[in-house]
Length: 226
Image (tube, rainbow, N blue to C red; front, side, top):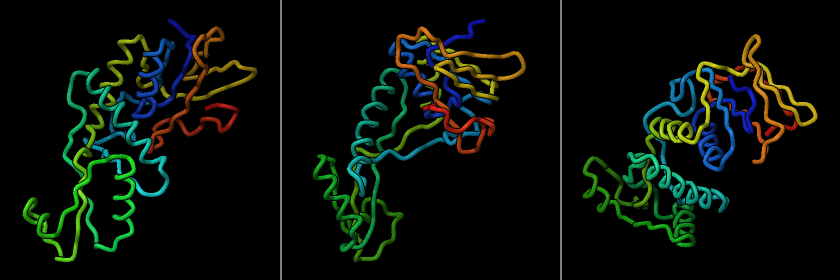
């Protein structure tokens, strides 16, 4: 059984699995370890949907990252050949003097994000289930929507394995050692994986812990690992 890889990823959820897919597609020899069988119900990716929108307030980095992520999700959907994104639109509602809505509008204009301003009557006519104060206003981001989160993880896994990435389900990482550039991942008695010393791709060990702490809590902190 093969034991040396360019990249070892502990935790193959939404972050780990997508990292494994993109690294494998760039020619890296990738091993993904997970305590369960992703997608599963023990990680932050669990559930049907996750919101996808672009008009963020605060740092411009959020909007730039969201737009970049949208491009990558769209490319993943095309590569997977199955629906992963539902462009339902996202509606924000507030008072006309809302600084939050004003900031979203400003950010949308800056980045060319299509945003429709609606009155309370407009929203009531379009979505009869809404009962709003006459003073409320809405901003509808047409290209926003939601991701099919578990389907996204499944798609990344299938595409990663097609690029020769190896996924080891039910294989929690028990101990991680790093010394003088040599990285060793222990997954149980007598079970050891190493980061290849001859890796031509950028050397990386990614330690990823799911929201439910599905990965063993004894993973080391620091140690120069990414």
